[in-house]
Amino acid sequence: MTRSSQSTRWLMFSAWAVAVGAAFAARLLWRSGRAGQVALAAMGGSVLWTTATCWLGPLAWRIRPPEPF
Image 1 (cartoon, rainbow, N blue to C red):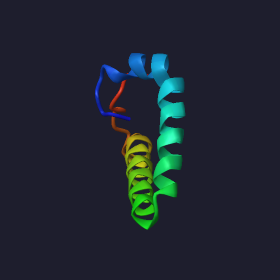
Image 2: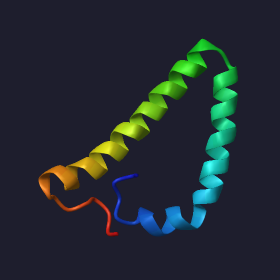
Image 3: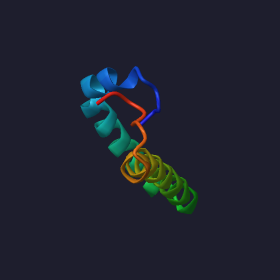
Image 4: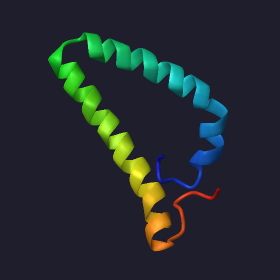
């Protein structure tokens, strides 16, 4: 989730390439030692936090989602 109104179309088009690239990058980071594992955990936490706020905000407070669905 990029919080941009133009991202939906491009993410749907390139989601498979982003997922495969992220999987390879995550594997390389995980193998690079403790610092890579901490960096990967921080990135994963950021993705989880952004996803949770984008979904729970509209559910809890009935506000509009950031992207048109």
